[in-house]
Each structure stands twice: as C-alpha cells, then as structure tokens.
Image (cartoon, rainbow, N blue to C red):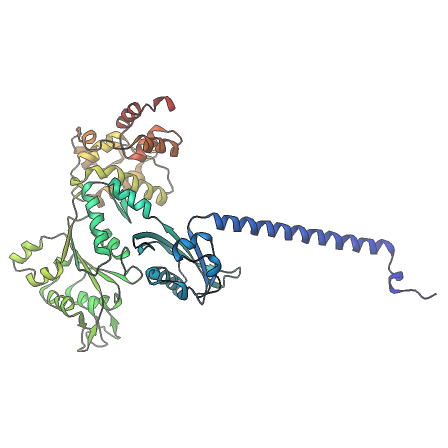
Length: 475
C-alpha cells in the first residue's frame, strides 16, 4: 500500500499546527473586530464634532470631511470627497484656502486664525480657523486638516453685553478697551496707515499685532523694527537694504525690512526717533510706495501696510523742528491713543489673572493670585511703567513667593508706598450675574477664594454678591 505525504507526519504534530492556525485566525478576527469598532467609534466622534473638519492631500484634493462642514461649504460631504478644494471653495471662503495653502507650503500649523466671511444670507460670520499638517507613521507629509469654528453668536453676544475681556493678546474690559477693540476691527479690513500713540508700556506692539493678524494680510509677513535701537546708518540699511560694496563691511547685497514685508505689514516702533534724513526717505515710501537700497539707484516697488508707534509728543517735536509735519500727516491717517493703566484700573484684576496664568506656565507653579492687600496697592499705585511694570512686578512676586498667594512681602518696595484707599471697591464693583458667579464656583470646585480671583474681584465683594444672589446656602 502506498502512503501519502500526510501519513508521514506524526499525529500530535499535525494537531499542534492546526491548533496554532486556529488560534492565529481567532486572534486576527479579534484584531479585525477591534479595528472595526475603533473605526466606528472614530467616525462617530468625527461626525459628532460641531466644528467643520476637512482634510486634503498634498495636491489639495479632499480626502475626509464631517457633516458640520456643510455649514460653511453649503455642500454635503458626499459632494466634496475626491474633489479639489480649490474647485469647491467659493470666493467668500478664500481665507480657508489661503490657510490651507500656507500649511501645505510651510508644513507648519496655523492656530486660532480669526477671519470674517460673508454668510450665505449676506450677514458676516466670524470664524476661527486651525490648520495642521497630516503626517504618516513614518513622518511622511500627507496633507493638512482644516478645522473651522463659527463664533459669530459668541461675538455678537460679547458685543451686546459690551464687555469683551480680551481681543487676541490684548486684555481688558474697561470702556476704553471696548472702544479700542471696535476700532481695531474697523481697521483690520483696510490698508490704512495707522499711528499708535501712548505712554511706554501700554501695549502698542500688541495693538499692531492685533490689527495685522485680524485683517486680510494676516498670512503675509509681519515685520517689526525698533527705530530707536539702531544708529542712522544701520537703521537705513536695516529698513531699505543695501547692495554689495555700498559701505565698509557690505560684502554682499541684503534685502531691507520693507522688502521683506512686501505683501504684509511693517511695524515701526518709536517712529519719533527717526533722523531728518530718514524721515525724508520714509516719506517717499509712504507717498510713492517705492525706495532704493543703500548704494543703488534702482527703485523697488512694494505693497506694504505701515503701522507706526511712538510714546513721544509728535506735535511738540514738530514745533521744535525735530519731526516733519508732512510726514506726520501721512502717518496720522488714523491715530489710536492707548490709555495709561491709571485710566483703566478696572482692568488690573484681569491683567493680574492673565499674568498669573502666564507665569504659572513659565515657572511650573500653581499660584492662585494676589492677596486683597496687594490688589488694593495695585489699584492705588500710579504705574509709571504701565502694563509692562505690572508684568515685571508680578514676575518678581512669582520668584519670591513660596505659597499659592502673592502677598506684600513679595512685591517691590515702591508699590508699598501707594496709599491704600477705597478705590478698589468703587472701581472694581462686581458686575457679574448670578449665573457667572455660579459658573466661577463650579469651575473652581466651589472654592470661594479661587472663584473671586477668577472673576477678578475681592473676596469682600464676592461674599457680598453671594448674599445678594442667595448663594450662600449652595456652598
């Protein structure tokens, strides 16, 4: 009798192999089931997100979307997949495409880009855009994902309440700051030259930053120059560039800041310190939108928005012959005068909380804020250095503080000379509603001290509001 190949294999070995095969098959089935469950959960999460999400490959072809994207593109996801986003993006949504292209080009994320678009009914919509590069397992670049959040309702509510507490990196809720926010929004969508004035330390650079990044040039360069930091010759080369051999040490040509800012915005800080010669050259840039590099005769055309700032009294400089009157009128198309901190002391608690959050992150601390006594000193102090001085005082407090509250032992001596008074209770009278106070208590797990700090008011005022709204029994 002839034997088959199978008959040569011992029976126990055959059974072991079969058992291993069955075990492997069961494991693969379990992995497939687990993967399918994971994908279903991921799709459910993806679909439930209220923000619009759309991803594209490196050729800007749409690979994934969620249902919420229809709110913006007015087309269901099935009508978008596989198509070029350039094909389906309406002119009113051009900022979405600009952000995607920027991320595809630089492979860098763009965070919290705020833009205004025209809604389908013609009414303006305020949208926050976040865009991130998509990377494969081996770090290969696969495209980008765009996340869109419509905050029009929140923005309208803030305007209705007339108490926005911040605008981009600017912090404040006072009437002066509400007016400032409104003016920034009005200027953001124009190319008007802006002159920002105010005392040193009031935040002029932050305002310039907000104007640029809230406007149509936000994805273009934002170039900053401190006109007081360089000598005349160096500043001229820095602003306008130079050709090789233009002066000793100029071994090769260099583009200036105006050239680097082409298409975007240039911010000229301390404009009042420009020499007469540079003032004349700068005037020509504003009038003709062109300049020459140092040592060159070829005119370079530019498209640049100019924002200038100064803490000097330019009117007085004009009277003394130190600043050109014609340049002043070219610069002063729209002036924004920033109030000193002593004219917006109701913003001090908000600023204190803002800097505490900043330094907690920087120093890896958990400081809850300042004591009531310190806050009273802050409110009654004159702040000659304005917000910058307040920031420095709090940073010093963080360094010296070994507890969760900054006390008078941790602040500079000159602040202790401030005469404590009743200005705090008069100026910082809490306008929070019952719902806002309950919300603060819930966020701080019903810690009254932390809730008062979150609202930017003293514990005394906080307790008075608890009694006023009959919330004492809830604590």
